Structures are given as C-alpha cells and as structure tokens.
Image (cartoon, rainbow, N blue to C red; front, side, top):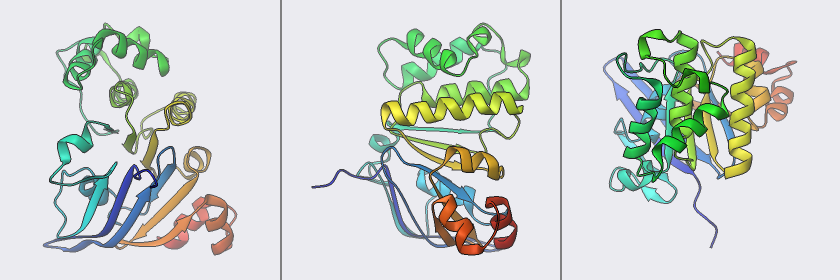
Amino acid sequence: MSPPAALRAAGLVKSYRRGRAVDGVDLTVALGERVALLGPNGAGKTTTLLMCLGAVTPDAGTVEILGHRLPRERSHALARVGFTAGYLPLPERMRVVEYLRLYARLAGLRRPDVAARAALDRFGVSHLARAMGTELSSGQKTLVGIAKAVLHRPALLVLDEPTASLDPDVALRVRTGLREISAELGTALLVTSHNMVEVERLCERVVFLSAGQVVANGTPAQIIDRYGHDDLEGVFLHLS
C-alpha cells in the first residue's frame, strides 16, 4: 500500500456573496514535493489554502493531510503542518526566542529552546533571538515567521507569499533553507507567490488557478512550453 500524500484535496468548492471563489479544485502534494499554487489576485489561492488547512469549511469537496480527513481529524493532521504568511503579525511585547519557545512547547517538543535556536540558525537570524517584536523590520518578522513554521520539522509546510517583503539576498537564503528542509526531512512545500523567478528556482511543479479553477498543472518547463512563452512570468500574464 502506497504512503498517504502530504495533502490531497478533491472537488473543493467555496462561494461567498460576491460569487464562487473556488470552483472544483483538485490539489495533491506528495511527501517531499515542492509545489507552487499560482494565479492573479482573486483567483482563489488563499481560500484554497485556508480550506486545505481546515480554517475555512468548503461548501463541497474533501481534504486529507497525511491520510487524516478534515475536519474530523484536523488536530492530528495539523500537528505535522507548518504555516506562515508574509502578512501574519508577531507579538510586539515578546522576545523572538520566547515566541518560538512557546510554539515549540505547544507542538509538544521536549527541548523547545534547542528547537527555537536551531530554527533561527537555519535561516541565519540567530542574532534576533533577544529582539522584541517592536524592534523587527517587516523582513525580519517574515524570517521569524518562517522559523516558527519549521521548528517542529513538519511533514507539510504551507507558505503564503513567504518572501514578499524580503531583500533578494535574504530571499535567496530562505529558498536555500526551504530546499534543504525538503531534501533532509522529506517535507512537502505548498507555496503561493507572485515572484515567478522565485517559483522557478524553488518549486518542481506549479498549479495555476484562474477564476477559482485549475487551468494548468505541471513542471515549470512543461507549462512554459505548453503556452509558448519564455518563462513563467509570461504564462502568468497570459493566464491572468
């Protein structure tokens, strides 16, 4: 019997008053696979991610994480999931290492201080350990958020625009760290981004959404060839 996928979503549908945001999306991410979920603003990316995490209930469709069905087994499923987004705030009156230790304890890690410092070291921000939330730049907050998402060595890591506020050199450090985590631990990555160069360098498969539906699914090279463009940015503009 084959092992369960990191994520398996089938027939996801979600409607709001303004219309149908997600319309029959199927999405599978294998263990160790690095997948980008792409599309213009309003395509349904974030709604799809939130349904896959059990934060939004789909009107129709199913979600399984590591074989655990949502919402019934959400606690078991999310114990092995990491999530971060460039827009998530950090506590202003806590030191970074205290914030990470708190999450490590919530994840049930036996050595929370070691886990917190290892996560900071992986992304080259150990010097921020004693900083307060109010002392961090937006890019530093993003890096701490990514460190928090990986400290419990998740099987599935979901990142919504993870490097949107980062300088190019820091974004490179993040991509390198994420690729290492995927290779070392077999962690699956599901990433949204508007940076097509970053997607081509980080992800081995891309799924394009438009108007709430999957319109393309394949490797970057396959999709670039299918639509006759020079790069993913050209495909993105075409599909938008």
